[in-house]
Structure formats: C-alpha cells, structure tokens
Amino acid sequence: MGAREPDPAAELAALRALIREAHEATKDLRGAIREARQVAADAARDTRAAAFDAGQAELSRWAEHVQAQMDQAAADLNRGVDEARAHIVNALTPVELEVDEATQQLKVRFAGNRFDAGPVEAGPNGR
Picture (cartoon, rainbow, N blue to C red):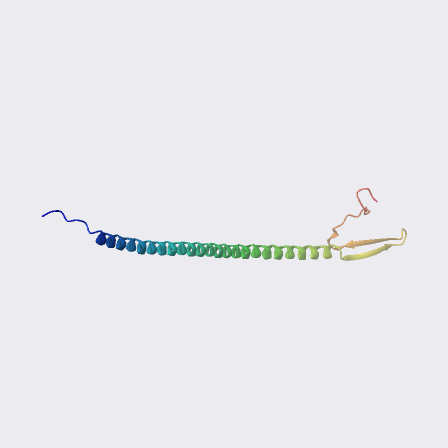
C-alpha cells in the first residue's frame, strides 16, 4: 500500500472552512474590541461625572462654611457698631449747659466728663 495522494478538492474545502472560521473569529474579536472601547468610554464619562459631582459638593460645603463665617463676622461687627454708637451717644449727651454772662461763652458738661476742658482745635494745626 502506498501513500495516499492528497485530494486537492478536499484540501481546498478544508482551507475554505478554516478561512470562514478565522473570518468569524475576527468579527467576534472586532465586536469585543468595540464593546471594550464603549465600556472604557462609559467608565471615563462616569468617572468625570463623579469627580465633577464630588467637586461641586465640596465647593458647596466650603461656600456654606464661608457664609457662616461671614454671617458671624457681620453679627460681631453689628454688635460692635451698636456698642460704639451707644457709647458715642452717651458721651455726647449734654448733662449741663451753662452760659457765662461775663464772657458770653457757652459751657457744656457731657456725661462722664469725657472731654477736656480746653479749647477744641479743628485740626492738627488749629485750622
């Protein structure tokens, strides 16, 4: 018995079947690559959205903190202004008015004697 001769038609059919299988495998691989790219794009989009949301939440928390600090500072300032206003009004409230008939000068005594008895200068040079 001798060696069998190759059947060209059978070999051609086997090669065509291999080519079809390779073509199907290539299509499946392309689909898998396309799906992987889509998953990566979706993950990147979701990550960007999550980072943006986290940043917005942190900025909101910080803005609330700053607003609370500003509100407290404004309340402290208003309290200080009210105290200063009350002090000035009290200090400038005349307690006694006296007219010196001889010199025709008006003497004013303020509450708490908070001012000097000497003349008032308009500025550093007396002008």
